[in-house]
Length: 121
Image (cartoon, rainbow, N blue to C red):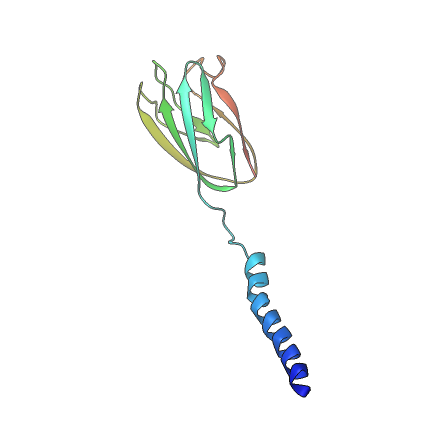
């Protein structure tokens, strides 16, 4: 009769020990966020971003000029070079939580609609 009493505490102890690493692992997350990729299509006179938001950390914007004239893409104080028709450029920036304005710096393009906001959580 003592044998079942011995097994029950051992079983509970093993179950608790097995669960402990899972609980610790679930509460520990890396200090940095994963890299994010955003596709940007630029054309007269708008941008289309996919996705339209990202987690904080390193974000790479791949900008394709789907228009007929040169465009660029500026966010967080950094910009791509002017991009010719059918060409692409990438821009990687480290973003903290917040909302960032983006725009095309070619004169008149932002006023014509090539601007928006990108949310970072």
